[in-house]
Image 1: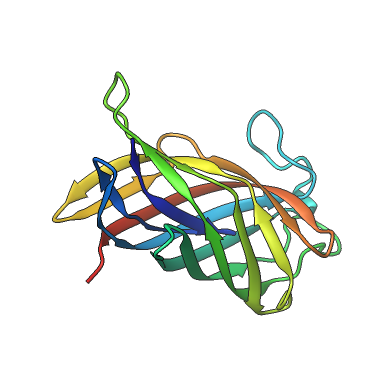
Image 2 (image 1 turned 180 degrees about the vertical axis):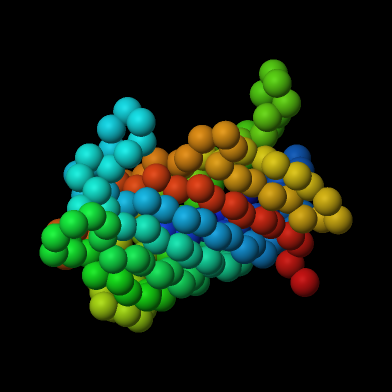
Length: 189
């Protein structure tokens, strides 16, 4: 199994990774990631529609990061939230955020059909600017599939179906989100 460290936050997504060959660290990587998420505090039905569209909103984000000497990824990102949808009073106001998070992950070698999967662990971070500045958050792990690899850049993405995550903020806010994510990694310059 090759190890790679990666991220997304809110959650955004980016990637960085040391590559191991025979247990020896051979290289470190930088990453860039982006995504679009549909958030719903009441969850989603079987058709992946918000149970209550009046309290749902979208988040668009981008992030970048690097691995450290201990094989951890630190990611810096920015996100923009829309207002909640539907008729009546808005339950979620539009806003822009900056954040920093950390996480680890692993990449499994190709399975029987040749698919390489990126398994991202729990992301833990803090909003550094915006209406939630200073509030910490936790985002559940997820998986991405390898798409293309060209000129030293490897792209992982939500292949064929969206990624479902749970987001918990230290101020008591909790919601589910469905995301379409893309992350690319390249050797550190």
